[in-house]
Image (cartoon, rainbow, N blue to C red; front, side):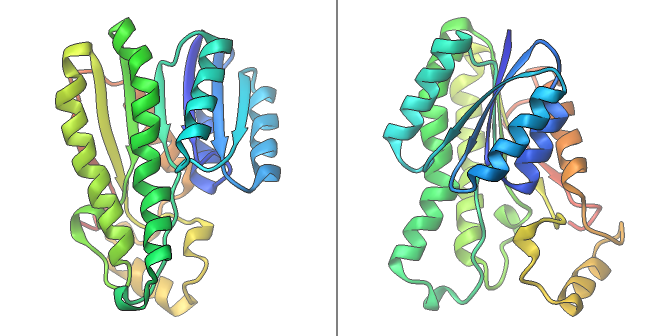
Length: 241
């Protein structure tokens, strides 16, 4: 049974990815953090579409949780074919106003989480000589964003991790790529005023933000691409950059 691990599955993009990938004969392992109600709703919707579903709630920056979740998936499904790492969050403000604890929490949630998932999932892929890893990055990983320096740094780290791991895992027939969306209509952007949103969308040639469902459709396409496509940071921003 094809098994896909999706992190951040309780969020807008993670949930949309889960629903897009939910097909009969597949097993989706959904990992979320504190929003267990949203995680349960996504799991119910996935099962209604005919897919098997496993759910795990915990801190992806905690190695013991990640190790335990991956071991449970392998005990149940006996393989992991793909990892779609969506988990992460943004925090706005001046870098000089960011506390050390806030910095560490952001790095843990956005970057350490990817390291831990890759560390514990890839041994199974390497043993089978096949697999796919897709990290959800951001346009700010390469461009940088004012008032989101820490977030930009973590996404830039994801981009470099993608390129390095693609080289490391290509001999094992494992593709590693990152999808870098621009503005997506999610709760992460709910702090923006209507004026701010209008100003941003005016800069986007497509004239609007992407929807989580469009990101999910692109994830689906990338999971079907030849594994020769690896080490790429794939933009998805309506022509913005």
